[in-house]
Amino acid sequence: MTKEKPARILCVDDTEAGRYAVAQVLRQAGFEVIEAASGAEALRLAAQNPDLILLDVNLPDIDGFEVCKRLKAAPASAAIPVVHLSATYVRGDEMARGLEGGADGYLTQPLEPPVLLATVRAFLRLRAVEAGLREAKERLDLLLTLSPAVIYAAQPGGDYAATYVSPSVSAQTGFSAGEFISNRGFWAEHIHPEDRARVFAELEALFRRGWHVHEYRFRHRNGSWRWMHDECRLLRDARGAPREIFGFWTDITERRQAEERARAAQAETQRLLDLSERSRLALLSAAEDQQLATRALRDSEQRFRGLVEQSLTGIYISQDGAFVYANPRLEEVLGYGPGELVGVRLDDLVIAEDLPLMQAQREALRAGAATSTHEVRVRRRDGGVIELGMQGRLLEVDGVKTTIGMAQDITEKKRAEEEIQRHVARLQAAFMGTVDVTMRMSEMRDPYTAGHERRVAEIAAAIGAELGLDAQAIEGLRVAGQLHDVGKIAIPAEILSKPGRLSPLEYRLIQGHPEAGRAVLQNLELPWPVAEVALQHHERMDGSGYPQGVKGEAIPLEARIVAVADVIEAMASHRPYRPGLGIDKALAEIERGRGTAYDAAVADACLKLFRQKGYAIPV
Image (tube, rainbow, N blue to C red; front, top):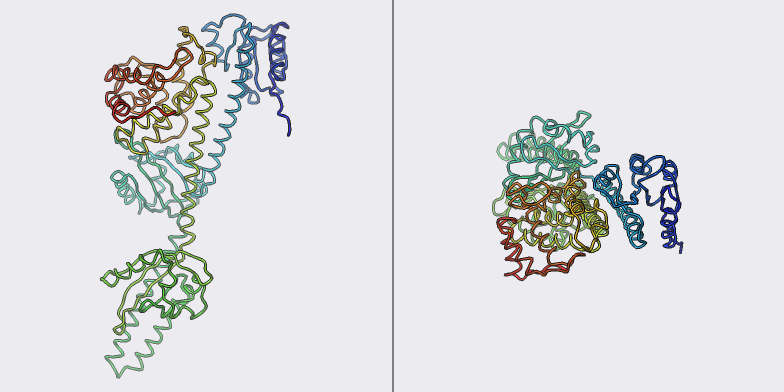
């Protein structure tokens, strides 16, 4: 087994004693150490791509703040964590200057070896997690690019402007995703003029049912009109108001063209059947014109047979459930030779599970239905199973009940639809994996509260269910709960795990994690207000919270729910600065702040869950 290469640390200090003290501790712990005595030398050695840089604030040529700023500005070194070393207690203005320059943390010298090693290892783990997160995002982007269906999100109403379109849109329309998003009304403007009014009228069904499926023509960049199959679902906010439309659409031009050809063939078949019937009646009513009528009938039958024999759609005639005629296309689809289907019963080909459907359609025809349309699985002569789309009509010919029908092999269409569903499932799995990686990254920074985000997510989801929210909204609460403390990534690890009381400066740093969380999440295209929950989960109904002092209904319902779940979990669990207070005291706090600090309905749902329904905090 290949031995794992040790992490490389660049230690920058203008004093040899300072460098030696730090390097000695790191080398004894198994790290490889590179030493630099000036800012210029640090910038040069950063090209060796160390895993972490320990950078003294005071250097003889370029101060540490400027060195950090240059490192973070260079693409090759921007991702390397930089921790400032200061010989004195870090002042607030000095720390702020460091953060503006891109520093990831601070340590004060002289350093205790355990603190130094814990900080180094924490930042190395953080860098590994960030690399994994980037890789997960790349996989998600690849899935969206490879998906044959165009996945989109749009505003619910007006011109239904797109807010997200997957990269596969360029393959289907010739336009880029950016053109859809940056130009309001772009989608509507490219719908065929004859379809536009119908599409917008039909979309009103989306607001009644919550979902809609429709088809329309869309102008490709090359000017051609392509048929699109569009399936969409309406997402609502916690108050039931439309929030966003999510869906996918695919190019079905070839299928529509095939259907048009099939309809034309069916119309021509009916026309020829009608002509044949008129010819037969003329023959019976006018004996003197028998020869002429016979010739007309023969010509009609020849035209009919020529059309049917060359049709791309399977055509058949059956009596008493058995084929009396099948055209070459149907014989090919079912794997039979010329004439071999005659006498074969259709029920013997349909698999047992689909026979009730077949028989129900047959009974509907006998009861007076004009036509029957259905899809069944049938077994080919070679044993393979395919799906047939069938349409039939019952006629009476010479007193005998006769079915004339059409059949098409729709196996590939069904397979394509199933593949689309699998792609969507993989996208959802990739997204939840990304959320899990982000949550674990936060836990690595704060090991004393490991599992906090997960437990808050489960408590919030349970409260949402008690409030009667739908499954989509509950899933959004679960994701928001898992990510609500992601902003703690920006807070030094020694503050997060400090066992004693925080200083005012340290507490102000802690209070900055909601805004840092929103900065991390605000550019994600999600169907839930996850970034707003991260920003406002410490706000209170009476305006006493932070960071903005928002109050009342201005706080989103999701943030109000996560706020209550966060208080319950935090008070009941152990912290570095105190033991857990227990669930009873946590519930008493929610009861005390009901209607003032906490939303009354949310507080009531929480108290009912724990006190009446026996709900317990997840382990």
